[in-house]
Amino acid sequence: TAKLQTVAKSAGKLYFGTATDNSELSDTAYTAILDDNTMFGQITPANSMKWDATEPSQGQFTFSGADQIANLAKTNGMLLRGHNCVWYNQLPSWVSNGGFTTAQLTSIIQTHCSTLVGRYKGQVCTCPSHSWDVVNEPFNDDGTWRSDVFYNTLGTSFVEIALNAARQADPTAKIYINDYNIESPGAKSTAMQNLVKSLKSSNVPIDGVGLQCHFIVGETPSSASLIQNMNAFTALGVEVAITELDIRMTLPSTAALLAQQKTDYTTVISACQAVSGCVGVTVWDWTDKYSWVPSTFSGQGAACPWDQNFQKKPAFDGIVTGFGN
Ligand code: G3I
Image (cartoon, rainbow, N blue to C red):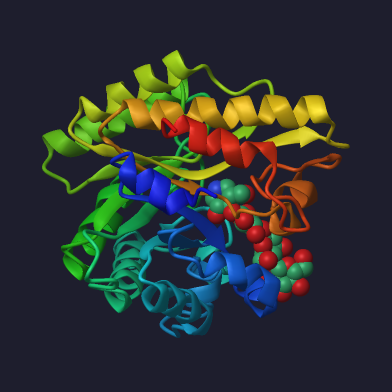
């Protein structure tokens, strides 16, 4: 039977990966599949590198959860995607409460990003690269800037402050800005493209744009629009990656919904396959047992390629098909 990392590599991609979380790692039936580096060649920590987990009080860094996942990736020979340095959500209150001068918040961002990124510098050094979602979700859906402590205090300069700190802390890491609803052409994707253009023209380091891809069965963007949009980014001189793929449905799942989900997974994977600058794909956990969807969208779920009993769904074969097999 096909293994997803093997299939992705032979299709010319760097990796097929998954998010995981520390609380899941005591489930031995789960880790038996997670730890197979022919299935997953890349790991993203779903929560344990976020600001609330890594710097809960100013200057007090706690890396136990983050280290556990970084070590898992290292032990298994998997790429590590750091997630994330600067995001409006899961911030400790000492940050989100604000009240900083621009100089104070600049220094806070620099210390946080450089300490976090620097800790995992050179991780998985036998692999070609690893990546960081340095800035996460900076835009509203209409393409305006999100109103948060970073933007409200520093304007758009928080982006370059964070990117510069990350680049200095680990010059070999690919540094990304990551967002959702930028997967097909539209106001939010245009805003991200304009940001990339402006960073490039000011020589601010930026290597890639992460397309989260939290989609809905039957409403997944078409292959043509996914490809057109990825090409718009790569034309600006950045790579793209599918960073948080899942495709949810209204429960209960039926054979028809699972079949449509398979088609939708194929659509997304084949779009990445069609764009050489799309370097890899990460699912936002591989099993419905640990998906974030049901707790956020009431009545929805079954978004992952394996079910809650760790049985492969039709979506699994849809991924394999998308890589051209
Ligand atoms: O850690 C606490 C725990 O102490 C407490 O007992 C428990 C009770 O609710 O909550 C735990 O925190 C939860 C945390 O996940 C860790 O499990 C939060 O409530 C919960 O809101 C949080 O959800 C995470 C979500 O980001 C928060 O925005 C999801 O697991 C995580 O998968 C999700 O990931 C995001 C990406 O970072 C960015 N893109 C979207 C994606 C999906 O929302």
